[in-house]
Image (cartoon, rainbow, N blue to C red; front, side):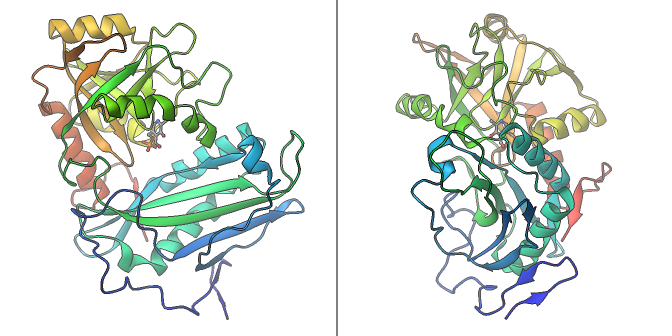
Length: 367
Ligand SMILES: Cc1ncc(COP(=O)(O)O)c(C=O)c1O
């Protein structure tokens, strides 16, 4: 049934999945993030020491042995990137090679086999190409979720000998309910002063599923306090700023944009890296430096820190309205609105991602 493409990926054309069903609302204003999964996936099995060529086909629920290693020892990693619809209707990816390399890094940390960069990018291109009608119009996007799990059945604490790598795609609007897609806004953030996310020597710089499970309790507690995000501090002393549960953080102190350095306990965000390159091109100074939390709060109170924002593929750039402290009380950042530098960066980044403005960095990959 399949056809072998140039890239060797087998495509199953047996089901008509290229067009969304007429009743499905792909208006980005109405899409809840992470809910609608398009019908095709890419999948490849790793068996006897090698990945197969992979296949694009209609996905079905995955059947796993109850003793599959992923279910017991969380041998699971993932990635997140997006396809954007350009004004001429073409589909654009943003720096997919960086996701491929980060996934290889995550795989090495979790004793999993690397999925090669060229195969990763080709799989995404093929899958998006087959489902381009599922990409919502701007300001929506198609969220792409590559995932790798250890599937071998064995209740022994060791690395699996068998893996499934798959990619699903989800038409998406805004990440934060209440913030309209295509516009940035501000959110309240709970500072986790006691619960840590990643320790030195741990897996903080890998996109390992287990990193996220340990944050769920405090994320749920944050929601009860009306906070949309949690900011984590270093796990050893809870004194320096690290990152959010799913985003990196930046602060505008005076005229300089500062962000914590990559010390091994936080994720090397692709949006973070892009902002570190984009801001200087817009005449905004940037600095990576250790940010003691007490200093941050003092500088927010004194007005020296004028803007704060979270950044990531899903949330793009979202301003921080205020920090809520575990012990009670909160500190508002300036007037609690999106600041002008946050706005400029948001607009500049998005117009590159959507192919609206020139891409002097060579970041965008056309499908
Ligand atoms: C823990 C964490 N930090 C930061 C980020 C931002 O990374 P990126 O900009 O590559 O999406 C993410 C999202 O992937 C994340 O999960």
